[in-house]
Amino acid sequence: MRSVVAAVLVPVLVVFLIGPYTFLPSLLEYAVARDVKTRLAVERQPEVELKSDPPLRMLSGEFSGGRIVMKNTELGNVTATRARIDLDPFDIDVWATIRKGQVVARDPLSGDVRVDVPEREVSRLAEAGSEIPIEDVDVQEDGVVVRSKVSVLGARFPVSIEGEPGLRDGELMFEPRDLKAAGVQVPDELADRLLAGTSFEYPLDRLPYQTRIAGVETEDGRIILSGKVPSIPLGAYPGG
Image (cartoon, rainbow, N blue to C red; front, side, top):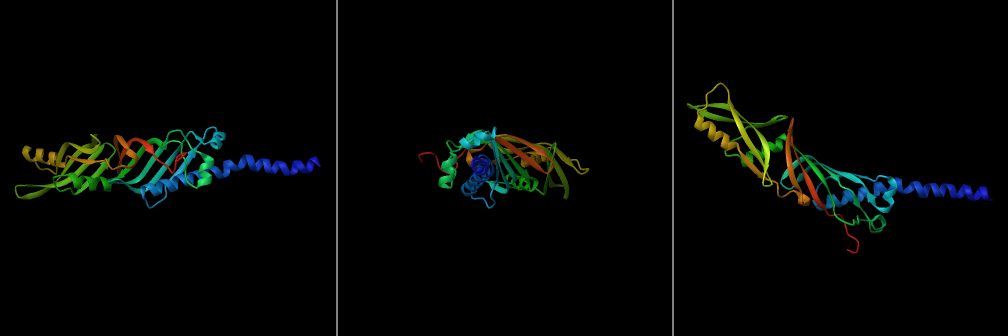
């Protein structure tokens, strides 16, 4: 009789212990992804990975971190090929989430954000903010090259303006530092005007979740914006 009881109880106990680790992460990740998609009105559902260390804490809703990844999406007024949020530790009311079918978080989530802005988008931002016609933008690991044309003695010549992206008062800016022309001596007055004309600022105040951008750097073919997301509201809150 004992062997029969053991044969029945052991599989049940195994399912009870292992089951939550099998279905619970996927269920919560799906709920978070759906919530973020709805709030941001993005076309693609984000990729979400939640972490709990040690795993047992997952059952009480304690998570050591996680990651939200959105691809080919528009964030405020900037189009990004990829946006990644590395989540700080957070708590979720697991059983209320399962019962209600939406995330019930004890507090808004927060984390570090990285936004990959492609070269073509940098070109669009430059064209929108520059005072001179922009023909091309080349984002390199050591900076940005803006290409245009100038008229000297009735002829047009290509010029390249080298510079770096930066931040000022919450705006993305381009700071030109050098001008090169194809074998043509550009008069100082014209050179100064070109350098000033390619300097631009672009507001980043429409990024979601009160995102604060604190850093910008260049890689081949893209610029990287980095900062902090202080508040990511999800679903409902206990008692809400």
